[in-house]
Length: 314
Image (cartoon, rainbow, N blue to C red):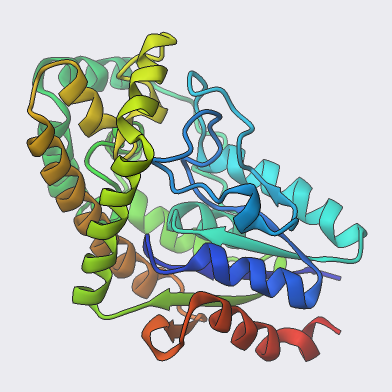
């Protein structure tokens, strides 16, 4: 029998965490984070990581499991999440996969083989890395948009690892990675899933994003980033490309003013949320979309999802 899982996806700042905790509280579940940044220890404020109080004693996995110097990929997420799904299911609980990294969620649901056992062409990788070093992230993202615009929509311009991956795949195979991923999606999922995507009016969401950034700064985002740099975390580390960390590092290193860093962070987070929504619409065809504005709070969303799934779980 396929393992049953609940998936709660959606753009940043729409209430996924609180909703998922409530689902788990009602149904007897445990949370698996599908977030590419919350896996890193010491990166709490900028990733909007749930506090112990917000977790309400619900077990959370794939949070605080890696050092910021380490790399994290969709393939590693699928491997780790798969193990946790087995463990949680064996305990008689329901895994609730929660996050906004759509590529990770899709990879888990489709058991994506990430190109299979193709032999890597190191010359292509080295050439792309040379171009990145010489021309910067914006230039490389521009190449990706020309090569594979659909895949580029799902990638943050600062996520150089995935930008290079898309260009590398095309140069190695002559095939767009978006097309490859679409074919992978046609495979039958190895899980029996119920998928829910939270959304809200764009203006309301952008307002929440701007407010969230202000709260992050009040809580000490600048000090968090300074602490990471002082510990020797390199600015080109995958972890430091995350929203909030890249912009504040630019300010701390004297490249831009604090006002510019805050402006860029709010702008880029809004753009990221827009790309998330576009990606979810294209990729999660079987999802039930939930307008968060129709509910008093995110906990009420959790109660709604729990009611929709309780018979299915049994």
